[in-house]
Amino acid sequence: MKLFNETFRTLEHSLQYSATKNEVISNNIANIDTPNYKAKNILFKSMLDDSISALSAKQSHSKHIPFNSKTDYSPFRIVSNRTTSFNHNGNNVDIDKEMSDLAKNQIYYQSLIDRLNGKFGSLQTVIRGGR
Image 1 (tube, rainbow, N blue to C red):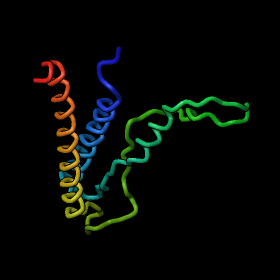
Image 2 (image 1 turned 45 degrees about the vertical axis):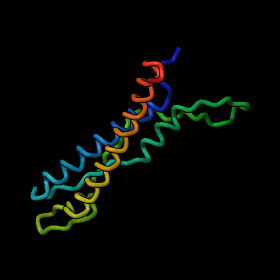
Image 3 (image 1 turned 90 degrees about the vertical axis):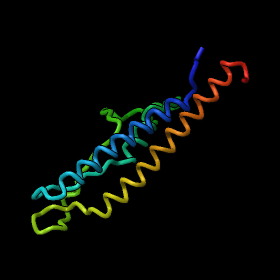
Image 4 (image 1 turned 45 degrees about the horizontal axis):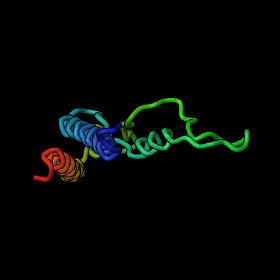
């Protein structure tokens, strides 16, 4: 018997993504004056690829490409943008962009927490017998 459905697992992964994104943004802000520091970003596409790689499908022909052909598994991919430079010291951290991303991520994180609290509230109501 499964106590929790896939919603809890999805919320857990989304919280991990948001926490990692917050860490990346915080590192970028902390290194705003570091010479030659290149801003980092977390890619959602790698999350999507990882989710797709977990799918399985029946191969009706030997020449069909399997879904799970991805070999390396990492929940998120963090990349640096080395092509730009905003400051005279080679640093490319844009504080306005980072603060905007931080605010969006905080709203996203809070919405996930609210949804998780709602799910646990529903479970609590069921356990109490509807009271």
